[in-house]
Image (cartoon, rainbow, N blue to C red; front, side, top):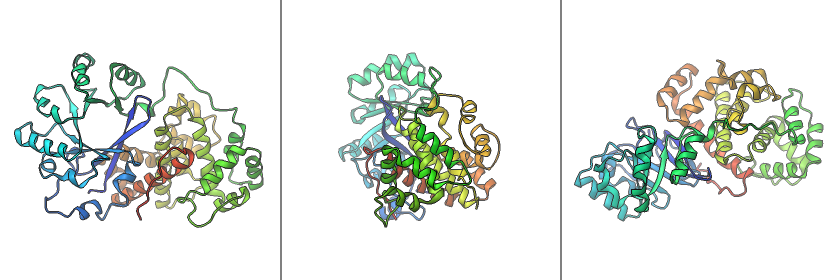
Length: 415
């Protein structure tokens, strides 16, 4: 089960991704698997289900990983890179001398330690000399208790992560209180304090989106739109020369790029461009999550042998966070977009195959393994295959994010 992983972003005060918490499907609070001490490291890291390394899952960011008592006692964190891994001590571990000794040894090996789901119980103080980060469950502790205790940790130069931050209001409150990092899906929800209109000033993008919605695709018309916009042409050439998209040929002309991509891939690229433009003031993680959803829903659609043009699975995943990108109600938004009615229905929550594909993506994002089991049965798709598809979507999302953001680090793809 080692390769069955979900990930939750941890954002800084500017809403940039600082790290990902990796949640392993092992049945014990999504911890690092409880394995036998004599099991070979190579077997653990390169298990039969694992299709990419932890560095790719975490986009070369820091990884927070929960460890339960047994894996801490056996020193299993030592098989992971201390430069990129934070060892989380879950609230279920005992606070006895054995565990304190184990934490000291792990700290001495160069790892950062975090206390997970901290509730300000004094019994956890025995770990404080070794802890770098404390994660506070903001739903389990009231605001007054958190505010009263926070100075103690700030004085000890311990960094603080606010967990389960689900609204923008809560993000602002805990940021103002002095928290360093924030975990929760607040960034993927609309902010009701303001509204943004569709970017009608970006005429070329809207024209392209309209063309890509047509079943009869007009290459000449699309080529003419790209030719009159240098910025769009540059983005197309950057995209087409990404090794994930094109490993064999160097594309240098606009016409060559259009022909090489073909109708379906070009429609997807146009949609990505439009979405990136709409969300240019939003956290990059929001667009990244949209990209992973898009590819995953497309792969599930292909596994179900859907033959849609435009690619509906891809588009429903890509636009599934449009309400958060534009801070508007989804029902109002979809009426303004030139997309298929089935896609609009799924985005608005109506039952159907596309809604099921989105539900699968959300199950992976939240580590809701029970929902994944149920949905995989309904769709008659194996869980093992779905985990593989989600891993593919992560790698693809990392690479495409690099194409649209020159500052994003390059991702290694493990074959």
